[in-house]
Image (cartoon, rainbow, N blue to C red):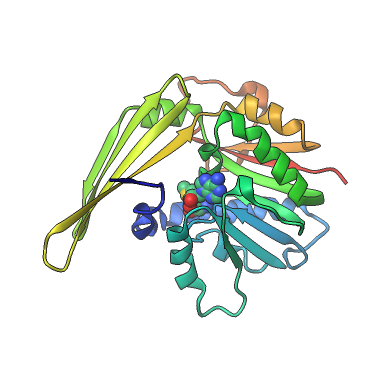
Length: 261
Ligand SMILES: C[S@@+](CC[C@H](N)C(=O)[O-])C[C@H]1O[C@@H](n2cnc3c(N)ncnc32)[C@H](O)[C@@H]1O
């Protein structure tokens, strides 16, 4: 049986991504966010994190005035729940699809970290911007990153990744769909049980390829200004200069849209 995304993966997600490298990225994203609110401190800003997963970024945002963290996967949220159980200053967690979210509360920041944006199809991108803009106070920031076309098409493409660990093994099978401009991932996990046998479970993901120029053009319909960074070094760059050459293409873009006052 093939399950929904982030049901099977939730149990081993932190094993894969809980590393110093990703940690540095979250810290840079947070620093950039605060730069964009030069006149206000973290303790004055309300944050909505979309697709919080197991909360690796969420836990770094707890010095903000309030943190509301949503995710479509109850399995990912329950991993986060165990992490915050003993905290006094807990984020508010909610299981919902972002596009179905109905809030009257407004936020100063809406943030999506690590590929959440790639889960939205090209048709949905407009709704994502519209919703983020509606949820933001004037002067608010919509921050997100997304995997580049180069990464999805050339690095992941039709590749298969497999690894064997002490207690589990996995196969990650990718297939590029040119018609839908997406990559389908079938993630199969083999988990060792107490009796020494392995339980097999598979889940399916689909990430959409988005061109930076399209994302910027769409976002500008809803927001007043923006900044884009490429890759993890958060090196600012000029949109006109993006090209694939021997220096390589960025794996990921970091985008910050600001709503006018
Ligand atoms: C790659 S994980 C990133 C998790 C977390 N942001 C991090 O940095 O580790 C993507 C997350 O986005 C969530 N997600 C994908 N589409 C979503 C949607 N439409 N609404 C809410 N959450 C969504 C998934 O359930 C998953 O937890």
